[in-house]
Image (cartoon, rainbow, N blue to C red; front, top):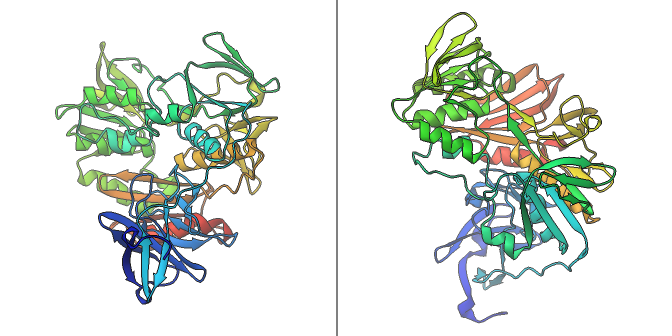
Length: 505
């Protein structure tokens, strides 16, 4: 045995360890998982480093390249079943791997994780400037250091607070019940110092793409070796009478969430304008805080265009059971009140009382600093498969317009933004960028979760295995006899495998 007996734990019999299945074991109170293949046995951390999901509830599946990946059941982060290295976010760290030996038909696991050898430092004299401090920006910074980049990393954003998980604003923060709830930081403050990431609180006022020059609000000018545009989106503001009244809110930042929380209690009457994912997640969260909520939507059902009638009907029924009122197929014509909101007027003349109005009508890319010629008719910026805009200039996240099967798409989802950023960071370093996984996102409303996988292509049929009303289903979206998307509830393993293999079908 390679180490003293005290450093090893007998976890199970070899005959009880199945092939090609994620198997949970433990060492004291430490949860681990084993993966046995014909090449041997590997042991890894039992919890995903992103949010602590139990990896044994995930799935092991083979990618198009022949490697096996372990996929997190909650948010579809994937890891190498050989080494534990991170393959796809939203996790930003690998799974720790532990030594394994087999003796007398028993599987023994070492108590200490195997140390990862850091890569050789490279590009010590380069500078990378990242515009933004959201999902894509942090994923890029993490990837640069992960791959051994030793030069300067500048993170430029007008938000002074520590970069945070923006998806938590509507899913967690509003509904937490706490007055001072805050979204979780993407990285602790100490990480920026330890990894020599320079945070610059400023805004970019102009980007000269050809000259690779940034102009800042402070009048400073930078010409870094590489630039990643990861400026994200801003909430789309209402353009109707009364939109500037006190009590009209948007939800895009931690500051927005704090303002909403401070304005809401059991006596608050909220009108949510729009039935998209942000609007409906916010409606669920505000109901959990005890507010009265009415949703006014131009659609007959929430998410019907994306998810189909059956699933959309189930989502509406869920909200109505929780006390949310719906006014479908109507537009808000004006917001009424003196200095503060007192209600809204609809396009059919109906008036609804309200003390708070939340606009959930979508977002628009932040590209004010770019020349007009660089912005396409989608309101984004074209990138190639390496996320390249021009020589040494890249883009990722909401702003990036990618080509897929001859069409261009802007994918406004967290995981895709991070995957794009990792591709861009590796390309900057002269490394293979890797494949972009099929876009995936999820929505959590009350205790129900729906996942969606696919490019935003139109469909003409929906085939559901299971029951939408019970939130236990797998739905296939079909266009011209081809499956173009999947939606699921209570099917984490099936969706986990699809997250790796969908585009291979």
